[in-house]
Amino acid sequence: MATASGAFKSREDHRKQIELEEARKAGLAPAEVDEDGKEINPHIPQYMSSAPWYLNAEKPSLKHQRKWKSDPNYTKSWYDRGAKVFQAEKYRKGACENCGAMTHNAKACMERPRKIGAKHSNKHIAPDEKIENFELDYDGKRDRWNGYDPSNYALVVARYEARDAARSRYVKEEQLKKLEEKNNSENPEEVSDEDIDDDVRVDEAKVDESKQMDFAKVEKRVRTTGGGSTGTVRNLRIREDTAKYLLNLDVNSAYYDPKTRSMREDPLPDADPNEKFYLGDNQYRNSGQAEEFKQLNIHSWEAFDKGQDIHMQAAPSQAELLYKNFKVNKEKLKTHTKDQMLEKYGNAASQDEIPKELLLGQSESQVEYDRAGRIIKGQEVVLPKSKYEEDIYINNHTSVWGSWWKDHQWGYKCCRQTVRNSYCTGAAGIKAAEAATDLMKANIARKEADDELPAPVEEKRLATWGTEVPDDLVLDEKLLASALKKEDQRKREEKDERKRKYNVKWNDEVTAEDMEAYRMKKVHHDDPMKDFLH
Image (cartoon, rainbow, N blue to C red; front, side, top):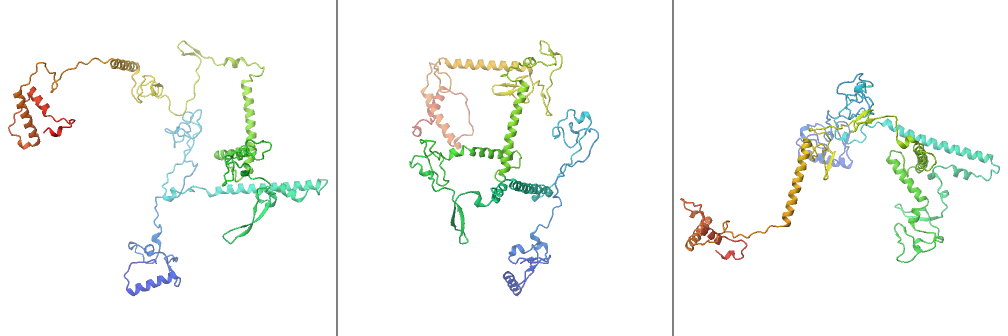
């Protein structure tokens, strides 16, 4: 029930309210009415029908469930296509150099590039387009029919009506022709009314089912949900024919798929072709009218992709007629192209001699060059430039990026650098790069030569502290014993810093006995007996 407010109710009022709701649900009491006089469904749950307390609803209503707040920023209007704003008479600064409109530049201009732009000719200035910006709401952004003009559908209706009118007119004309032939014929009994009707029928779907095919009919009981009904089922196979899976009972012969009733391969490949009446489904699929039907389907798909309103299943007669016209036009175009080529270049197989103008490639324009290749007299053929930026050199370069290629890398031809947007170094950079390359090759060659012939290494006897061991080195036993005690004391101090004294005298002099003691006390982690040394 749509509750107006959450006022306090006594137990008796609450019981009466529940009874009234049950009666409304059962249809014994009239439904509750909202502010607009509309009935409120009594089966709506209370959490949906109850209005929030902050709305201060005095009467029951479902207004709080609707979107009653409208955002003024959103709009449902659409772009005014093709609308123009202002038509200028002179070229304005900042306008498109091609057409003269202020709403776009030359790069985004959709008009055909003029030979002389509006900036220089100051003529035929194009009007400015109307530019609009809409802020659409959630539904407006997702409305696929937004901006559609319903009056355009009248063209579709008119096209279908014209087709139906042409079809009925054609049927009437054919009927009149057949009647005239019947009246003018010598034996009018030979031409029957059924023959006339069969000839003038256009839509095969409207033809009586009994006149389409001569297959036998089988009355069969067709089970349905309503208890069953008697229907007519066609028998598409003559009983005298042998089933394809019985032609060859060998297990290793052609495979028969019972679900699709297809046997793609030839069941009797070694039999005489003149005596066989079945050669496999693949033979029929790739021969006869099947191949032509396949080409017809491909032509319909390609024509539909290119914008033609054609569908093979919806309008097969139209698709076949368009395919026939396409083949005729294709043959005409091929013949016309062949005639143009023969007219322009001649036929080498014929006896006609080729003109000298074509052999020597001469023309009336004369251009003279010097030894360096510069033009002395005449004018060089100027290639037309596009509207995009070309031949813009940056960072002192004299060639564009991509004019140099080496070792699978692009670069600049002027300085042969492969780093884009780098500063041009010119000929000096080329020489420096070649010198660095030569130096690198020399270093690589020298390193390879050194690796091939390794120099003999003289074994040196090293002391424990990294210097060469003199031949006359003799360790003092007493000094070695005292050095071992000092090393033990140092290790104990490392384990417990509390035993270190405050006044420590440090001596940087290391003797041979001290190094020998350090080596003897050092823990070798690779030694398997290291845990038993201390």
